[in-house]
Image (cartoon, rainbow, N blue to C red):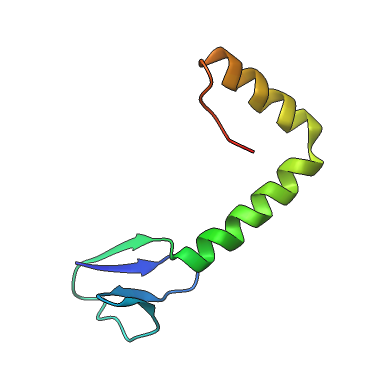
Length: 72
């Protein structure tokens, strides 16, 4: 089974993520490579920091669940 990044389409190999042709007839699973994960996390944090309603909701949810939630 080959893992392909759902954002940039790089494939995970034995030495990391790289661009390569993927045979779509073999088993494929999708994930997120470390580079795309960092980019997505930066965007989430930027939007999260500017949305106080969302921040307040997440804090309330974290308090209700005993401390689980997003760490900032």
